[in-house]
Amino acid sequence: MASKDNLEWAKDEVQGQKEFHYSKYLQLEKILEAQRTTSDVHDEHLFVVIHQVYEMWFKQLRHEIDSICKEFKSKDTNFLNVVTRLDRIIKILKLLVEQIRILETMSPQDFLEFRGNLFPASGFQSFQFRMMEYRIGFNEKSRTEFEGSLEGYKKVMSDKEKKDMADEQGKDTMFACIQEWLETLVGDFPEKYEKAVTKMLEAEKKSDKEKRWFATLTNKDEYETILQQKKKEKAADRRFTWMATFGALKIYLYRDKPQFQMPYQILNQLIEMDTLLMKWRYSHMYLVQYQIGNRGGTGGTSGVDYLQETVRNKPLFFPDLLNMTSFFIVKKYIPEL
Image 1: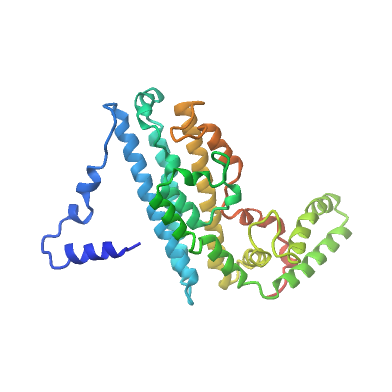
Image 2: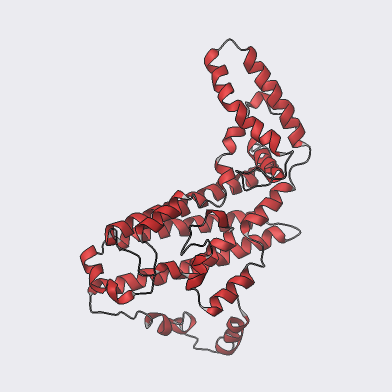
């Protein structure tokens, strides 16, 4: 995210200066003067600092996501960079979950003392968080309605934020980049996989182990869903195209092969990223319930009820990866590449 203004600043302020100072480089005067409180309640300073730090981490996450998208769009993708930056994203998200524990040290009574001053400001208005969601590839169908609309969250944005969001929506998301990459891996694997599944199910049917056959029967419909999906462009309950679904399944089944070891790591990192984002949503929801009970949100939402709805809507970015194990087959039936 090195903008033209940042590069100009570096040229004017850094080059040729013998006494370029730490505080000037980090713009500490601006940062440390930015903690403005609305009261003399001790805990409000913590409240401000935590939320400012969140915004900085959201910005850094966008920076890493943009980098990953550029890697996948390049002719010669550096998968080591992808793995490294996904690992960084995961570590940042773990930190964001842990930061909630610091907010838990603030008592609800002390929060109530200054909360009334915040109206109508709210974390619901966090533009950085919305941009981060979009850059990963949030499924808009999973978004919780606000004021009767899935796009209700845009009503609280400034005109500049709406413009920036519109500009951002012209870029490829990480989800789109991952899906496109997975589609390139398919080859003739779907045909080989279908034959392998048929062979495995027939062998299981002839087995005298009733329990094993019962387990196969319960999974047979699952195999059918992925086999039938290739006859359609996209299954109704999946985000990935059928080609991307088979590309991911191919990685999982051949993860021991050298060419699939790093892709396998990437898919597992995406699952961990998704899990941590959901964990953050849950932790945030319980924190809000602890702090304000059933009160409405300062930004106009229903408060905890709204947050519970966002969790119920399963806002996962890569849900198909979590379900991929439904389509695994016993190793001896996995076809040769």
